[in-house]
Image (cartoon, rainbow, N blue to C red; front, side):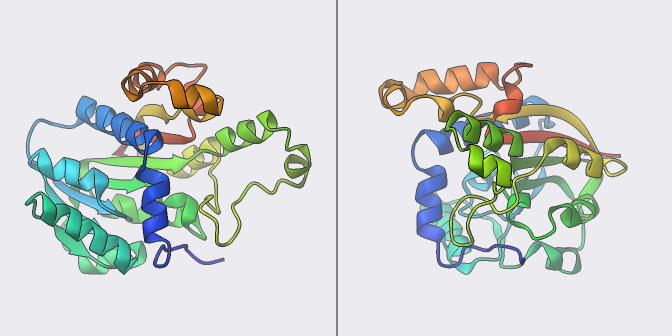
Length: 249
């Protein structure tokens, strides 16, 4: 298995991930977590697997110096257009994560790695590279597709045959990630590299709501409740994604 890039799926990816409530919740949770811990000064930021640059654009608008690294040219071009439309500047690098240590001279105050690990053939191999690219007093914003939530979703749907076969990864050409991550396994691989400072669930209830309730719910109310419950001890681990803010060890 090789790392998954999105050359042919950029538009569909954008619509699926950032269209509607799902993308709004994701951005709201990640932004709230970062606002809580990041220092109040301009930072040098590296966004690995930046996609269409949604999070990077928000950080640039906060006054940070942003570099976007993305291997898929259509996605990176979409990010360039998004920045140009609002008059924001950034550095754009078309490269996979493996190439970044050789291209970037200095480590960054903040490194973003959002929804990347689950598309990699060897997800844990990126962790030392993330550490190399982060300053000793910097931060890593790590968001990943949560295997626990995927299991729970399949249980709710009665997909017991799928559970018995343990076939939870997405099909080769689907937008279901190919490597959903077990948070306990990931935490073990972080040891010696990263210390997790905060943990939040992203979409801890929205995706489990019946469709008719989703359609009736006001987005402002959903965002309020997702933010309020993102660290609830019973619900945080059900987030379809988990967001960990980490410091180097």
